[in-house]
Length: 372
Image (cartoon, rainbow, N blue to C red; front, side, top):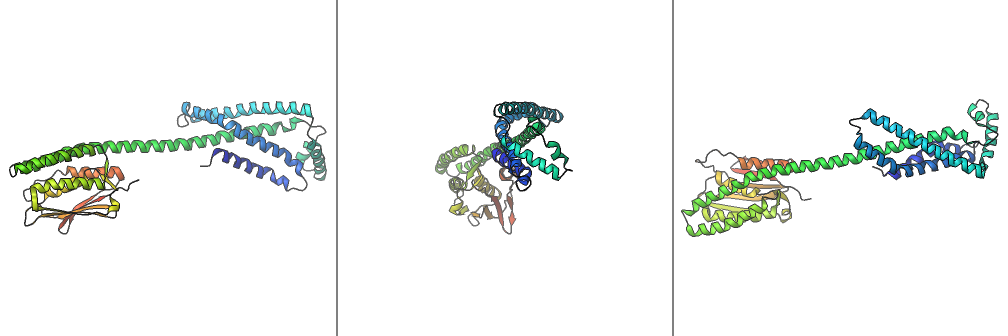
């Protein structure tokens, strides 16, 4: 939107072009006619610049105390009263100052020339009653009373209209920013709730891994516990964040896979194919942990048919795929982790992930978030 002062200059220029320039190009009128209009345009512009800050504050006050949405008729009456009141006071001030000036300095020189031109025009065109009636023998400000008062009415009407438009535009932008902030806070609150549901899920799965390992290898169990404490410390820190970078998720995934391999050894194979240019892209925190754990929980693992998990990024999609070998003894899953991940993605960027079996592979496609 145009700045106020520029808009005011454009308005005065348009009014001047509409009412004054035609006289300039009229050979019968001459420059004496335009002198008054130049003075009027200058005073009009000066009035716009002088009174607009005062009217702006007044309109701001009225918008708070008498908002348009609740009191349309009352605001119209108030605005009309402001226009008439300010116009009357300004008219009286201008008329008084002009009277004092002309009383001391006398009538303007150009007025006599204008009188002569008007007399000539009225004789040449007797049907132009306006010109004939305007001709006088003596200079008098009373002939300008109507023009000055109407000019004041137009001046304050324009100021109020423009200030109302600018303030409404400003308020609309503020409302938009406020609504976006509220939506963001709501989305983050939802994500926090989902993360709080996910963190106990992570601990539960980790303890399951540990419980199976304790009976098999005490030494590696201690090592597992030490690494688990480091990882869970990271989980606690990361749980405070809504999103994480691909780089951090990969670091965590490698540490997590290290713990898993203590238990599963050669039953689990994990490979990475990540473009370094995508390391600063974002995704919901703890995404890779969820997808890796999901693959292990749902599929059979043995040394002859190891579970192979491939992690890669194609364009703006994180892809995690594994060979599909569902466990026969696996009970129906609640799917809370996958549901939460989809909800978090939808809250963050209104996009959903894909989970499904394609040929002999189970594939998860997670849309990444481009960093700002």
